[in-house]
Image 1 (cartoon, rainbow, N blue to C red):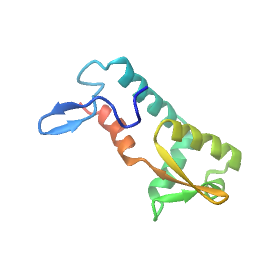
Image 2: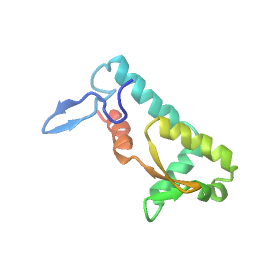
Image 3: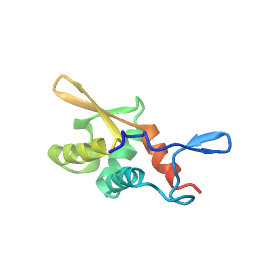
Length: 117
């Protein structure tokens, strides 16, 4: 499988961008990579987690700080963060007992670009 955020590059005008599903057929690797990212986004809990991360003043959130706003247990939150992490959408940084998460904005940009014509 391709490295996250390393989708095949195509030249569009003066910008280099990710392949768009709307302009040309994708190869299997790119389609699989995009599908993994979109599948990870296709859950309301994971979308809430992403929105909390996006709104975080410092750009990162401790795993323990998702429990109350999301309304799920810490093991459930960890499960969803594992899926987001496997899809390359978030990164965790262990600090002692806790893990702090941040968005991978370039991976999100790759997914967004894949839907642009």
